[in-house]
Length: 114
Image (cartoon, rainbow, N blue to C red; front, side):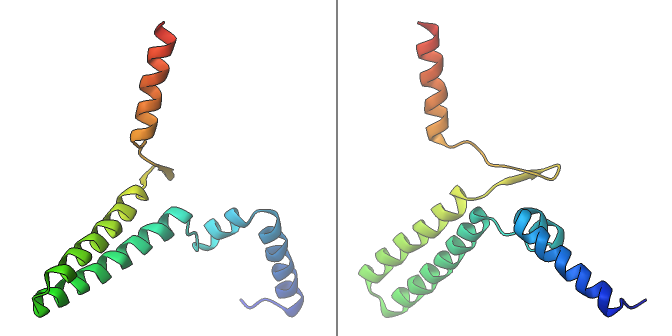
C-alpha cells in the first residue's frame, strides 16, 4: 500500500523533527549507528592492514628498516582495535575497564581503609 504525497510529507517532517530532537534514537532506529569507538576500531583495522602490506613489501625488498617500521604500524593498529572494542550484552554496550580505572580503584580502596 503506497503512501500519499501528504503522508510522505508528514513522515519526512516527523523524521526531521526526530533527528533534531534525538539523533541517537534515529540512528538506532534506522540501523546506521556508528559510535566513536567503532570508527576508531575500523581505523585501527585499516592501519593494521596497511602495516601488513608494508611488512610484506619490506620482506620482499629485504629491508630490515622497512620491516621494523611496518611492525610499529601494525602495533599501533592493534592497540587502536583493542582499546576501542566493546562487549555487547543484552543490547547494552559495555566497555572493559582499562588499567587506569583499576589503579583508581586500588587507590580508592587504599585511601578509604586509612
